[in-house]
Image (cartoon, rainbow, N blue to C red):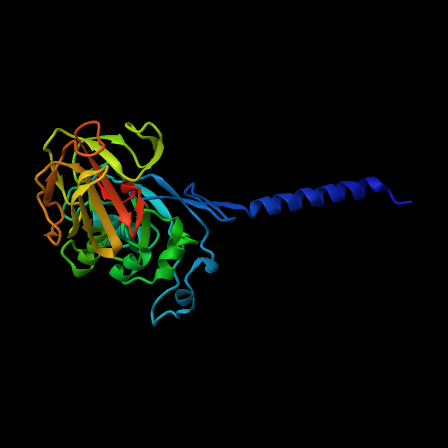
Amino acid sequence: MLNERPILVLLCFLVFTTAILISGAFFVVRASGHVELMNGASEFMVANGSSALTGSSQEAGLPTLERQRPLVTGEQETARVKLRRHKIQTGENLWMIARQYGVDMNTILGCNEELSEQGQLQPGREIIIPNQKGVFYTIRFGQTLSDISAAYNVRLSAIFKANGISNAKYLKSGDAIFIPEAEPLAPDSKQAKLLESFVHDTTFLMPLKGRFTARFGWRIHPIRKRREFHKGIDIAAYWGAKVKAAQKGEVIFADWKPGYGYFVKIKHDFNYTTCYGHLTSPMMVKVGDKVKRGQVIGRTGNTGASTGSHLHFEVRKGNKAVNPFRYVRF
């Protein structure tokens, strides 16, 4: 009869080895200390030194047309961006650092907003160096990845792959993304102005500076003392404070409205409207007036169902009231 102990020891060794190999497949530790999670998420530093978490770059997450589009002559397949920190040494300049890491100066400038080509490099300061040519761009409200892709003339699928993005719907304004093979846009360039136009046309100014006394959502009405949905925000201000149009548009209502008192409603592009309630009399605009962004359209008052001098401000998409804080630039 065979001795069962060596066989048992061998089986235990095989099980232990297999477990190590399986667990090792879930992560790879880079020499720089970066840990890449192979099962989907990866942490990488953004330009300001903080970290961002993105999903996996699965092909299924890419738009079909981009997934099928062939590379043009001379174009390389995009790799996932990896970032390193470099501590500036005395006597170094951008050209020396760029040469050391195999990138160009525009890439370093595009990943470190506070640097300038002519500016002095401060010894001891840490800067971000990517493993490939490109720039960081912070998404602003109203912009899409398609907008950014077109402005920088970079394939959308390349942006997806460089950042490990599986679904663009999880991106939001304020997120920093890496644009591979891109260079910083000149502020007065056609592309920069195009990107700015998306922000300008789909965001709103705060019409009045003051203290927020009521937010968007359910609340107990201060007069009727019952639970009601508040369709806008209330901004307290002294009587007669100037109220500005949140965006350019056309006045489609300017009169008394029950509950709102003296009330102005402005129609904007992209099926948006803004509403301004509890204004004073006389009205400063009339129906049909074309108003500019930031133009004074009225003054705060205490008209209608109001407990004090303030502005009631609404943003509507179609006929639906939406949270103004999601659309207003402070």
